[in-house]
Image (tube, rainbow, N blue to C red; front, side):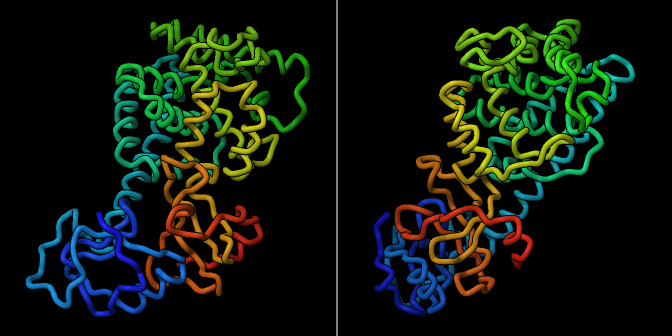
Length: 383
């Protein structure tokens, strides 16, 4: 595609091929004219160029039937909302499935591995086609009587996304998903007051918590799961530097699934409120994990987390350098420091009439200053 300088755009003109903000975001289809409002916005957000395969013309010779390549911004919005809803429906189905799976285990000591495998296959497909929307849902704050249910579902989603980044083959992705969904199954053999309590654990209770990994391994071996799956339950609290439990394993002596789940599980735990702690926002959770990255977590797996979520994870509300406020909606696979941000309030505090999406590097000089505080979020006005 060739670059067209924004200053050369003519109000009322058309383009003979779709006009793009960059390779990911379409601005205009061939039957939509350039407007002064569009030019004003592009200048305001410091975009110097837009891109097209066509030419700027006074009037189209005919109206093009819209296809996927000539989708208008409105149709993009509709399509995105449909994708958001599809991801949301799957997410809550996964939560309900996880709850039913653990209830069946607790009440009847059964695990339906066929249905678990099928659900993991669905997760793999949804993650592939709708990754950004699905990953954002893992940060929803859900009221629950037992945090292990959303924790297990969220860890499975994050683990599958990390596994896909690491290019695991299909059969290993399925095993990883099963491992992540069931990694904390040993907790259900402990008294609930231990893992749901708000009190400081006694030495005996700490030993019980550590034992949940061993219990999980024995439980899964009892259901004849593959050894890799059972080992993930045993080793997901092991750490690369040997500081983990139950066996103080180091480096590659820890199984791959356990190394992946360790990162996903730790991040999910950091952003989630527990009976004994408050949650962090996604950005702070990433920074906290970064501090221990070289010693505690597999470097390649942690890199996968940062590239999948960016340093400002999807859904993070941020303050931009020009005073505007926005939401991170898409990670940049080439640069985790430069996600895509949808503007929620411009620098004057106004809600944009149309979607304004900027890329934090490249064509835009706008930078992320910091995440919004809880107070700022509470006072934020949405459309």
